[in-house]
Image (cartoon, rainbow, N blue to C red; front, side, top):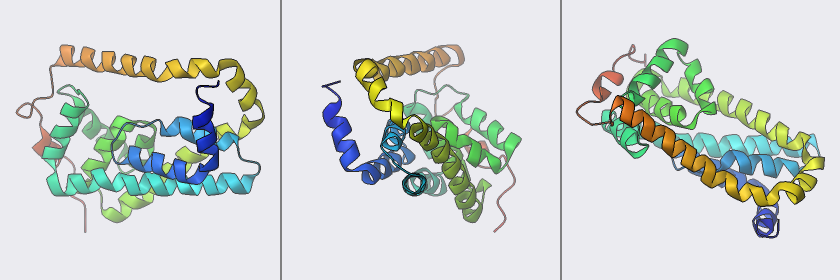
Length: 218
């Protein structure tokens, strides 16, 4: 517990700012434990009003951050999809999976993608390609973010009384969560690459991905 206590103290001293920055960074496409930060921050809240402010700050940071892949998709289009696939060790199916997600759920994919970081990045980039108007993107992105923040923030708020006892008992084990989760994700992505092949620019159907759905009406 003594190892993570300084970090917890800093988080509690800069509660709203820390959550805003965490979701801003993750929304822009940089891996960051924003969900854990949100839950920990919510455990320190004392009433529903504070929870509402935390949810709004979370949504603001996430939506602003989501503009990075959206604008990237608008300006760079297929090249950004290719770059994302290569940077995330994606297989040749990484673009196709997100396109299928869009075709199945339509604009609701923006809401649902909030619960998957990798799909959310591609969904924002595909929206920027022209699949969804900017107005629809903002509306559904805000809805998805508010739902997401309310669920995880509500969870932290609900366990607030037990959080200190849990940290005292299991706090040292939290230090193992990040490396174990990272190693598991890396292993899974390497396995997919070995099965389906690496995401090669020539093999990715990124051009088709940015035109596979009906163009957004403006």
